[in-house]
Length: 552
Image 1 (cartoon, rainbow, N blue to C red):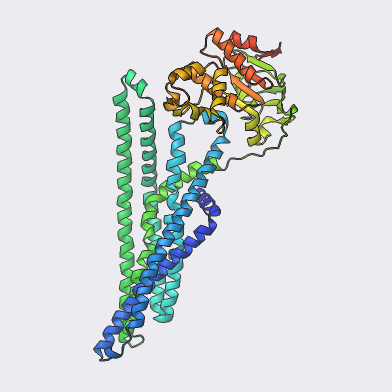
Image 2: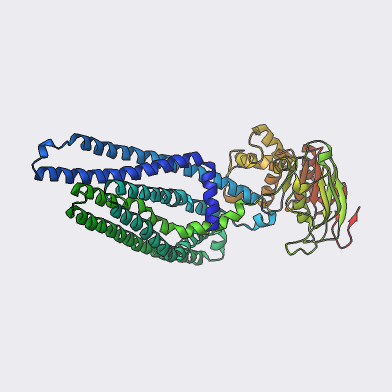
């Protein structure tokens, strides 16, 4: 429950004023509902009693009638305002929560982000956040408003009718629904979590089926993938049926609780009226007030069906949104673009050292190549130079400050990295390039494409408005890599990190691409994980990562 409380605090913090207004309107709606039914009961009973004793012509029907109409219309208006206010506040709060979640994910180690499947991430951003939309709307606000109105109604009944009926209403509606909620929560928690897990599994498998359809067709596994989707759908459907069954049972017990309170109020009221302690009309106030309060506990039924998935979703996303780290400000100047490694070493996820400590620097206008056998840590050095990770030994500084401690926004402006795995999205070529520079002109886009020897290819495909499919489908591996290079060049970084940038290109084309990169960024410091001779020959200096590190 601790995770749920943290989410509640986050939701309410950003929209406190709107939720307070929604809370006030919720209370108004419930109070008007109780007053409307209690007044109507009193009005009908008092009018009937006046008619029976021959005083009907003297009974004032206008004031109660006007009040009934006022309460009915006022309740409708308050309900509209309450829904508008709380739903709008909830949507804004969830939007802010999604932004915090995205920021938290981006603060995760790069390798962790790299292993995060698209379908899993989509579930976190959509399904998990959506599961929390009822936290305020159907649990917190209705619960607090219901408890407050029950207490206010009991006090009013004690003053207007009789304290005994007030005690029955207070205890009946405060204790009964609470016990039903605790009983239902214990039963619904597991099925609700299973239904949510089933929905996420179903979504993930459908996404995988679509994303991997070519491979599945080639290897004849389409039917197996379809069966996996169907099993996930069946599991989700069965779990959801269990949740709905528990919800119906909970609703029945809530109804029984309400009937018991109303029956008790009726019996006690009748006894008091016969004893002459109160009139029949006053007894009717207590009876109909007890009947109206069933609306105040109705949200318990809906909340039970969602409490399990709310808790599970909160547990998954709270660790992500809480990620943060202190950063330092760094002035943008010539010195800031010099990357300096002193006795620097990195380790893998098991904290095992990847290479012996090395020392090197990359000054503006220089190109330094990292070489070594596969798996020796070249990509890890680039990641830590981009601020994703902390050295296991020594230091890695930019402008005299540890790279991972530089302000994130500034570091993003200074440094650009092109990893081995490119990241293109479905959309036009222009949209993919403008991810790095939204304000870039078409001329600037063509210039970057020309630098990486991709302009002619793009022109043949239909120009900047040519559509790419999922993950950049429509481009070959080498073309996609060069598209990612062009996007990085648009940032005009001071430090450019390249991980085997010419992989998949023939030697002449690789040399032209490297020359285009340097011509576009003549003053940038370039650190490159090199594998091919063209990349090594292009570098000004080479740093070899091996048991004995050498700088040549």
